[in-house]
Length: 195
Image 1: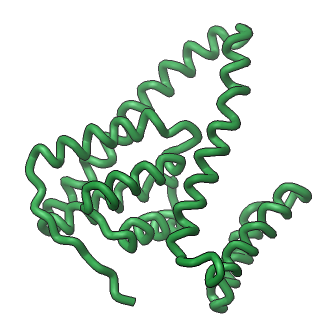
Image 2: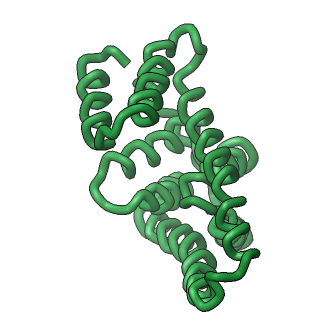
């Protein structure tokens, strides 16, 4: 499989733009930074063309397969943007800009809000806010899944992937099966070439 690698020369204004967008993605990342994948894809692949679809999806896949936090895909995205823009030293700059941009606002906000929320946990508005955020997080995660699954091509060709997704969701909903068992089953099906 050939991966198309775009080549760009990024100016300092482009790096600043990337940093500012990462700050915004950070504040949008209710439920985790993975929930911002559709918007990241729109900005980095469709609008700026700094990454190809294959690079974007590979960054996510590699980071999810690697041990460690889910946010590693942001570092890989920054790495790929930097590599497309000029090599190793630029790639390290891409990682730094992407990671600081995505971590700084959400970490600061989470820390301050957690302290405030803990002090005021009995307020009706705090309880209502927590309950109201649940459907938003679920919707953002569904849209992320849709973007990643649609990269597989037409629905007719990707039906095993959709079937595995539906079966996994049903198993998680009906029975208390540890998620690692389902991930292992998915890895085996993928390794056999069935999905």
